[in-house]
Amino acid sequence: MFSQNYSSCCSLLLILFFFFFFSSFGALALEVAVKAAVGAPNVLGDCPFSQRVLMTLEEKNVPYQMHLINLSHKPKWFLQVNPQGKVPVVKFGNKWVPDSDVIVGILEKKYPKPSLTTPPQFTSVGSNIFSNFVTFLKSKNSSDGSEQALLTELKALEKHLKAHGPYVAGKKVTAVDLSLAPKLFHLDVALEYFKKWTVPAELTNVLKYKKLLFSRKSFKKTKTARKYIIASWEPKVNP
Image (cartoon, rainbow, N blue to C red; front, side, top):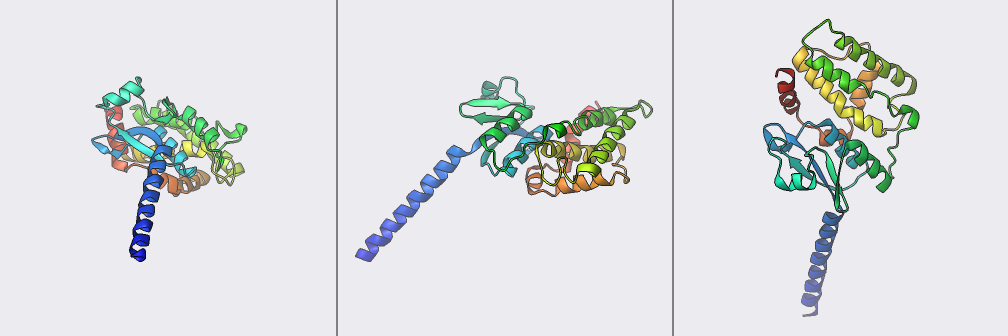
């Protein structure tokens, strides 16, 4: 009799423990709205700014609940909390906050360990690569200088990494790396597919840097499939 009551009591306590544990986990998890894949609304999409935020959350071990947003058919609740309809957005308290730069800044303040702060002198490293990549990707004129402009930026990154690598700020990954990782992945996938172009072999430090970034657990867990990157860029490259 005592044994049965004791067993029942323990079972009840165990059930209550798991109930409160998972209830607390759900309450503590940040809500994050990110882009869904083109043509696959239930799959994580290709947005490099969304991936940057997700990578930051992963690196800081912050629990989160992800909402996949079909940008072609944005849900009503999403537009109500975020009238501009842009992603990513994260819910801090009762407020949904847009802009990956702002979000990452808030995350660093709210969850300071591990620190991902980039030293001020390195925050702009590689900042022009993505815009030059997009210009070159969309270019139909081989003599317009867009390829050379991208190469200039990649060579500048090569020089920096040679002096300060393996990451932008040295041996430790920081916010600037998490910003560059998704953009370099887009560069690799889109330029190889649409232009049969790859980063030159002589940029050895850039190649090592990409390999280092793409091998991180946070990157692997938050990246989308190559086919979704291609599908997203297709109408921009061939309108």
